[in-house]
Image (cartoon, rainbow, N blue to C red; front, side, top):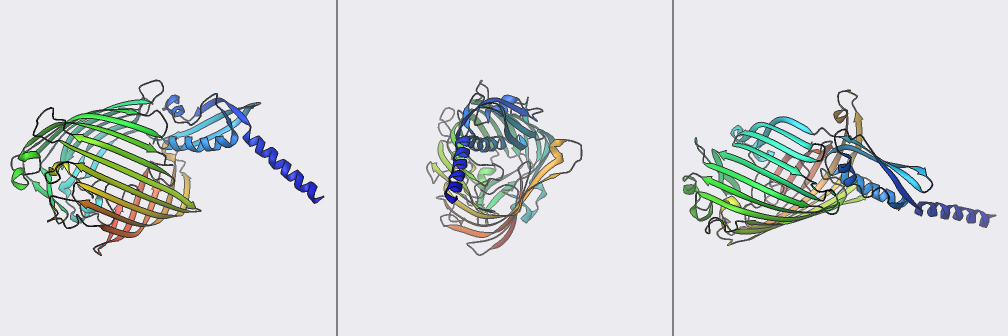
Length: 463
């Protein structure tokens, strides 16, 4: 009797396994909730298409990949993919999305500092940029991005950016143009003691004009190649050369040059706003100056690489690490200050050094995080009845411990910037609040190699 029971159980399991492995045809794909987004934009991000023959086991994997790529378009707040049988051997796939709000007219408000914490240290309201912008993240429903910006304050700026991710039928080739004009009464002309040095005047002392055109090739869902070509012009007042004769090349007060950039990116993270699983590899090579305008102007090549890895350790535990590096191919003792940036700018920084910059020609930075999800992802329906793009939102909270390290090579000003040419490291604890529209708020306490404690606030994911 026992043998018979075991035989029946094994038989049922085998039948279930065969059923899961049996191929079915995707007879139709129905897209719901796309009030503005074109259907082909959504279908482009799916890992399957109509007519594919797949097993139901494979469908779960393809569903996860498709949800990931749709999430990373930053077009939708919620995504649901399901299927139902239609006829023998056929299924219908339903992709239901909740769109974000795409058009953002509003105010420009940004800080002319490396981060919020360095601004808060001095609270210099003259170093605030303000103005108006109009941005459409899904122009014409084709995932095209249009931005018009009118900025005043620390830097006066007017600019336009237009990106079209798919100009061919398969939506594998994209183009874009970007241009802006800006001028300043105050500029950062150097650094000492690993703090930025500024000069301010009543008159405008720097003007910048930039024009760029780019191509992007995306033959597969997770790989992108980009090629950009542009013209930059920088003009400074003669007084800047009295503060730093190497601000522009060869004691010049005008630098005008063409540049060329090539990059490759492989993106397989579950969410670009706050990833928990997957990885991203991004590498580029930039050529500043092609020798087509002035032979004695800038002629510099630099390579940059970033690799971020995110792992789910099990349960509510997650781990992430990042490696970022830059190498400058140039006479390292003669790199103009305008063109050199080390650690402390944008995403190239290590925690615990928010109040410093470490200028240099080459750098490497390593970051690591271990996270515990204090509050799992919660979805709240406010039922305002105003717009479904705002009525429902999600949030989660993470506690994390981190450790960072970085090294900058500076062959020019290391005598006055002691953090360069030495290994710097830090460790600390943080609390992250994550919600919709890729909003992240981080509260972190850290101690760096110099034994300096600090409490800092950030507004984007560190890795």
